[in-house]
Image 1 (cartoon, rainbow, N blue to C red):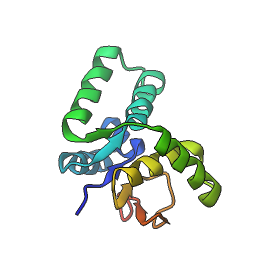
Image 2 (cartoon, one colour):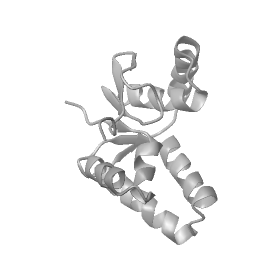
Image 3 (cartoon, one colour):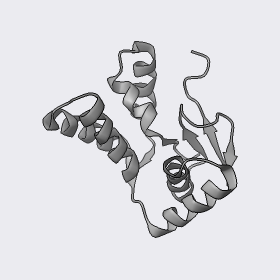
Length: 133
């Protein structure tokens, strides 16, 4: 069974005041999974702009994420697939690129709180890991 692909919104709960979601996110990340460089970019942006973290703190967060999760690159292939996903499923381009990277990495599950729970794209299911909280 493949490890899940994890969206940035799940990872960012590590830094939230919602203890139950932070604990669940930490447990998910500890079991392993995959992210893309885009996820790292989104986490970095939120940490810097919204959370006002300094670069040393951001670096520590990114290192912890990379130590537990496999990071896959963004490629022309994932870009082209993201465009197709946008056209077929009416997702934002950034969400579609997360889906494309997950599909390209062979993930059968994408954990995301922001996308439609239960949606299936090219055999990959989107699951909200916080449903039932």
